[in-house]
Amino acid sequence: MTQPTKRSLLAPVVGLVLLISTLALYYLFFLPSKDTPVQRLTLSDLKGLWTSTHPKYKDRFIQFDDQTLTFGRGPAGVGSYLIDGMVAKPADDGLLVHIRFLDLDANEYHLNFYYTGKSGGIIWMKHQQGVYWFHSNPEPSYAPDFK
Image 1: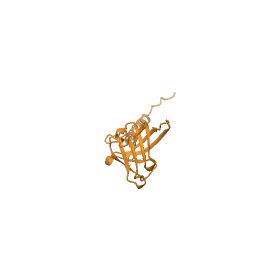
Image 2: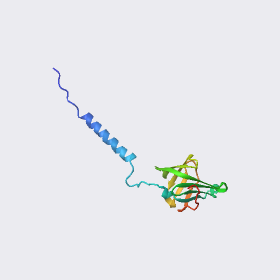
Image 3: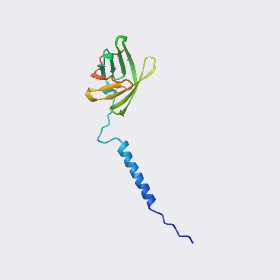
Image 4: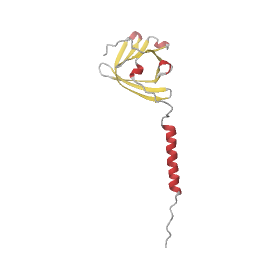
């Protein structure tokens, strides 16, 4: 005759402890802190004129309004585009912003930059180091013909 085996409570307890530990670590390292407010960004936050103090871009500007993105290209003139979408995700020093925009022929373009609201607003291009654009005027000053 065989003896009934007793189930050990050790295995389920160890499993439960591992599950609770894993959930606690996930909560600590991957969920946003309640003390750190999530920074949101809209086109209204970007609205206006952005200029750079970098010598190469002293006669250039970037301008956002409710619907358009305009690049001041110095002697080459200006180019205005219809903003078709914007996504902003948290990044190390602020937000990583992706803007999709269209020209008059509906050709699609993309602009990726980092943004921080510090010091009135600063943006810098994702693939261009050392060039910072400052929010120099909250109102657009160039009226594009694009609209």
